[in-house]
Length: 372
Image 1 (cartoon, helix red, strand yellow):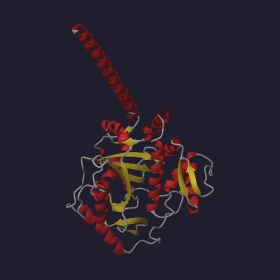
Image 2 (cartoon, helix red, strand yellow; image 1 turned 180 degrees about the vertical axis):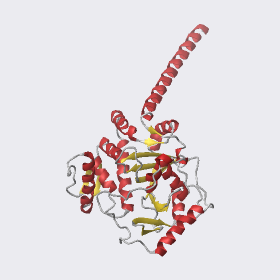
Image 3 (cartoon, rainbow, N blue to C red; image 1 turned 45 degrees about the vertical axis):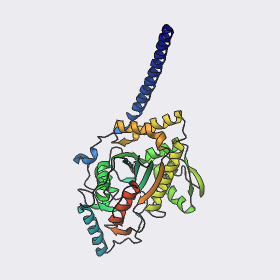
Image 4 (cartoon, rainbow, N blue to C red; image 1 turned 30 degrees about the vertical axis):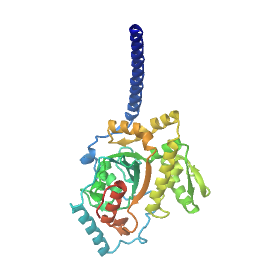
């Protein structure tokens, strides 16, 4: 009996050893595969948000020009009154010197700033065309996606007061992260940045997105498509939209739809961006392994981030879990907390900072008692 038990014991030990070896081999394969994807990313130091390199900073940025005359949110081409402008400048000053409202962070919440840049020349800093702060809350199992409107008028550290989207042109993602932290008092842990060519690649890779397009939007969307065709050396009217309705858009058309800021305000614009991204996210979740591999190989080399390899690997392993998280969407500024103004020839959005800081913190940290 003892001999038989010994043999069985050895057999079981051998089986367990084989199972462990297979498990270790599988884990190693997963790690190597994840590492191969991560290595394709354009990585910057994780602490780079604390430093804006002087050689990458610009002293001035050109006026925006995307083939259309500047829109007028305030309804006039003249600057707002001196009294209104002075009041807005003072609100910015008071917010920046206010030390009673600390920058809020939480070990259970990871804030990643997604930046879409209007980059036409590789290697140059450019304005951030889209800014969405994605907050992954492990405690309440939720993801908050907060659009920050590009026309928000605030102080850019080390620069003059300007639109929020100018921070990226002045000092890249590092300065943009710092600008958001100092003005809105929330920690921005990491960033991931892409230009609009990557956006098109993603939409095309998932087979397009379906959205409702109005007749009023078509001419503006086609103007953006014409601009993209010119940049890409394609026929001027290639991929033009011809009729309104529920349309399936390819990457170029979806980008033109998402960039439209001439129908409605910047609020509608950011809503369109979130609509397209959510539609794309739902389709990405349904990709098979071959399709997902193709998408990652095409997109990752065009993504710049300061996420560490360990953070990215952890997020990859957590993707199945994140797919079940509740998703909340909102925008800053919130309702009844802003004014449209015109300052130095720019259409801007001036804020009630107290209201927006409180709203942003409540969106990101719903279980915290936020004083306002």
